[in-house]
Length: 244
Length: 235
Image 1: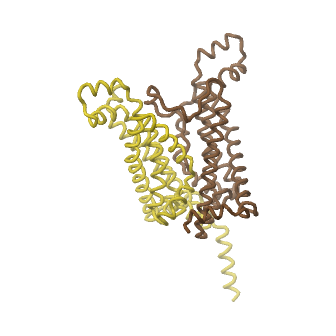
Image 2: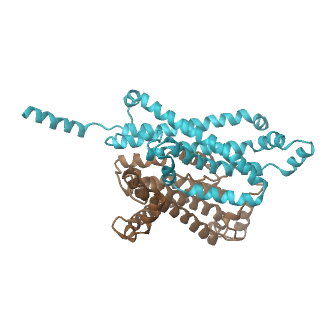
Image 3: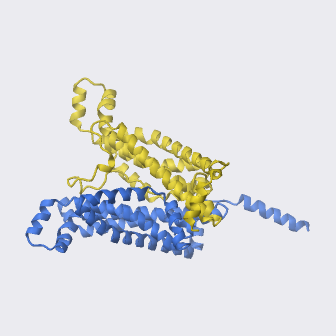
């Protein structure tokens, strides 16, 4: 029996799901920590990204931020927070994950709002819209696709990197991988890996559907957006999330 | 017996009150050899993963450019691979290659490959069709067309991809600590295991960041050297 068969046998046992600290408990912890991290990052990054994008300022700083954040290993930040006064546990994990979720959200919101045609804004103002109305009814719909892409990238990245918390004694589904590895029970390790991969893919899929539903105007699923020749030479303006 | 006991409890107290600084230059100098060994592993894992990834990504990108039917699946598959958490990726590879650096290398190559395919494809699709048409009309062979038309025009996108892949790989290598081959990441988990020795943890973390920045600067320099015309245009 190889490790993959052992993994499926493990996943097939209902007790492994429902017992205390079983898969369901770990899943709940994983999702709760991820959701909290994304929420914190949204509160911090969205207003800043929107404000900078509307003012068309700070582009250099945003680029530097997203590049530097890519160079910092998540494992490093998780560990540093754990041994700082914050201490081990879900709080340190949440903060570390939130830090990494900020750059994609901020960058995409910035690029999205900066890209709104100045003529369109001016026309909306001339039609008598207040600043708030311009923001809600003109800029937001136009920037929505990029803003949603940023949130999706950040969320998938957070769900994926929450796995690493297990390496520094944290919870979540990564624990199965670390425990299985430590106890040389490679079936459990593979089962954990399968669950984590499935959760990340499901999150991506769910958010693709959500952003498709929320995006105004002509609706196209991102998968169908095969890069066009004329947009080709430019590298992506957005911080592509790290698969850590 | 009393003095001995007293000495022991004093020692415990001393350890408890020992300072645990965030950075310690003497730690770095005392453990220079160890740090260099981990740095060496980190560098070769990164270089090997990016080079292997590029060697596989280029033909894939060329194929995907050739047919729209292939481009869709290649991009979809790359999204799926990219979404898989790295710890899970290493766990999947582990039963095949065990506790070796190869396990980490395979995982890292998969990620760099995925990043590179996207950027290579973007670069190739950015080459204007009429330019290629003209080159073919001048009698360039497919190989000449690639080397003398596609490659120079797509070079900025290629280099952008290589830079992102390299920096991401430097950060990702740390997750190799799962199988004991995480390069500088070993310092991070090693310091954690050594009673939360902060100096070791921070040395590992800073080492990773510095390595990534140096690699990025080097590649930026290479890009400048390879595209003299871009500088001329800017001047």
